[in-house]
Image (cartoon, rainbow, N blue to C red; front, side, top):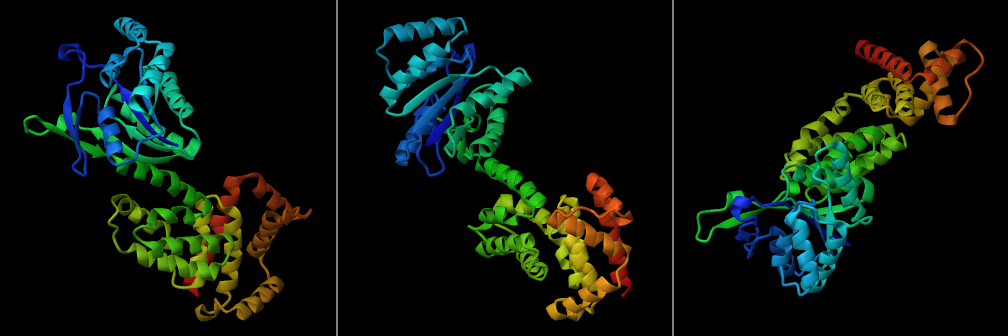
Length: 403
């Protein structure tokens, strides 16, 4: 379902209690004149042969709902009289708005829903606004917002609704429009530009996906954000994510280096460019000069994101790498030989890593000995486990510098 969400405010009585008629100019040059920007936006969508399935009009009991009467002529005098009576008392009811929405639906040839929202004075009222918007948005709907009219707090709450709908309804936010009456030019009659605030929704997309990618290692979740401009980067992120999740450390190192090189080039997309330095820092550990350094730095990054199993595995693999010259660290046969030797000539840190790995990866129970008790203690305290893994990583890093 394609839904257009708009708000209805209350014009200053000194201005006649109405919005002024104004010509709005869209980015493709299309112009139309209206007292209510939603009507202009609806005409624009008709011009594009892209009429929404539903128009959701939000307003408080004190909003100037009678402005909607100017969109078309209503023959239901009883409804009109009831609406005008309620408007005079700033007490428009949901029942009257249901009738108004049904009447406008027939006359405008599009499903119109008029919904009451509270003014948003308190946190409870602000939460109610989010709830009411969500109630009218089915799962996976395509939604466009018009943030032109209404109390000044409403655009902020509508932008929050964008984030909320993405999270709770899997909604696709198509466009955010603002009819900028305050930017109208000096033409006669004046023309106001229609501003697209799509950058805001794009930034919200980044804010949603980047923490998820960092916490889970699922950098493939960022791939479609890059696909239009950098398909090669999108593909590298997908490969890297798969390699991380399947512990293909050598392959993951190579794909991370590819990603770092691709991130050196600035983006045309302003949102992607804002986040490029952040992503570069996320992959800074990949600049390690050999596999051992990469595994150690990658393990520390995994500890920071709470992926303690992966950090444990990487540190154990780093011990194997450090037992070999840099040129032999990616040789599978040499690694098997080094691993066998480590198993024979183990030390306290190696025994701890092996015990932790077995418990975390295979759900083994710690043995009833001193080492097993230490493992139990660590598995009961995430901060202590993270601290222990970081200490081992620091030791290994120092060992690598000395070798």
